Image (cartoon, rainbow, N blue to C red; front, side):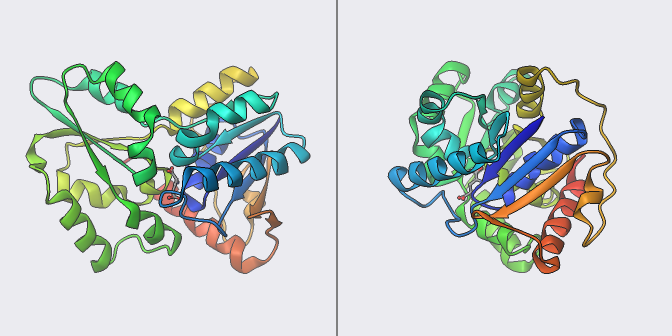
Length: 273
Ligand code: DGL
């Protein structure tokens, strides 16, 4: 099957990474809209326009399904896209439900996302449905998107930012941190430094890929250990194939492909944290 996956940028690679490790034999078209990243600080109208263009681009590639690997774009545009186009379009949802269900006593849940995701109605509706005990606190983390794009995963600058943002909360009260933006996966080791080793880090990637497998009638494989080699992107998958696009421009040069490989390697490194 042909599967289109897109994001504003490098965050979507975390969804692609989950997809190729659970559904390794498919053909993937990965689109990062790096010309327009970050979406999380843009208007709804702008984001809807970008998303529509990308969906049409992927339809031209004859994909069987599209995954919007971006919480921000999902919040703003998934409903319109499903009305407009006749193929399965899956989105991301912050993993608030499993986090709330696992919480005990007076444990609290911290949900991080972009400013757009936090102010959209989709999240408000999700919270009113699942956060019945009002355990959830919200935190916007827009700078992590640009840090991820710059492969700046572990510098003093990132640490100072996390310290300042988490410093607004009593960090001893949280049992789970929900990563409500796909760019946030790259920083997993640091969250544990600030919120403690026992904090559960929850993202929506596994749920989305399970859902994708259901929709397309595919069988989930147990985690494929990815053999990632710089400059050899096709080695990422055993039998399938990935084509990368940078805002519509197919990536064929080693410099940009190497960046994707470094990012996927980072995701492999943080996978089980
Ligand atoms: N990766 C995206 C998300 O999941 C958005 C990042 C951005 O472009 O602001 O929300």
